[in-house]
Length: 226
Ligand code: C5P
Image 1 (tube, protein in one colour):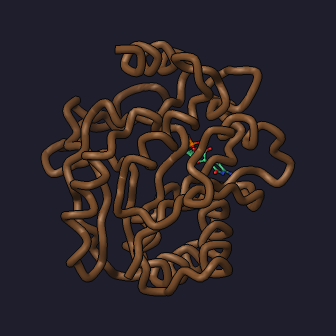
Image 2 (cartoon, helix red, strand yellow):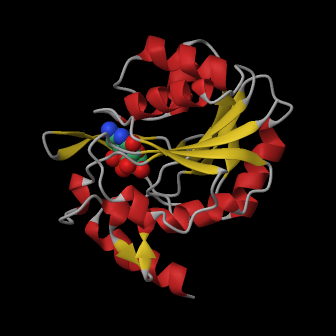
C-alpha cells in the first residue's frame, strides 16, 4: 500500500479576521500553506500530496509555485465544509490511481508548523495498525462546560485529548466513513469512530497548532523565523 497526503485548503478562514483566506496569508515571507507543503515534502514515504482548494480559488497556483511537481498536485474540488473537501479529494486520489487500501494522511493546510519527524512518528505508529490514527495532544487546561456564559460543570480532563492532524486512515474506509457521517464532522477520526472503529492516539506537539485566530499568525511567524 502507498501513502498519500491530502491537504484540505478550501476554507474561507473567517475566524482569523484576515482579508484573504488564512492559508494564503504571508508568514515569514511565504504563504502559510507553502510552509505546510514544504514540511510534507520532507516526508519521504509520501507517494503523493494532493492539495484541495476551492473551485474558484485563484491563489493556490502562485502560492505553491515552487512545489515539487509531480509529487504535489492541486485539485479545485473543495466543498462547503471541510469534510466535503476531504471526501472530494479522496475521489480525486482514486481517479489518479490510488487504491482503497492505500493510506491517506489528511493534514490541515492551516497547521503550517508541522514537522516531517512528527508525521513520520504517526506513520510508524499506524502503518501496521488495522484502523489508523491521529496526532493528538493530552489536554493541559482544566475544562469547563458552559451554559449561558457561566460554568455549568467542570469536566474531568484526565484521558481527554485534543485532535490534531495529520489523521491517517485507509482510503476506502475513510471514503465510506465520510459518506456515512455527512458534512458536519470536523475531523476524519470522528467519521471512522461512527463506524465503530477506535483510531489510535499518537502524541503530537503543541507547536502543531492550527492557525485559527488573528494572534496565531504572530506566533506562527515567530516559530517559522527561528
Ligand atoms: O476552518 P478550520 O480551521 O477548521 O479548517 C481546517 C482546514 O480545513 C483548513 O486548512 C481549511 O482550509 C480546510 N477547509 C477546507 N474546506 C472547507 C473548510 C475548511 O478545505 N470547506
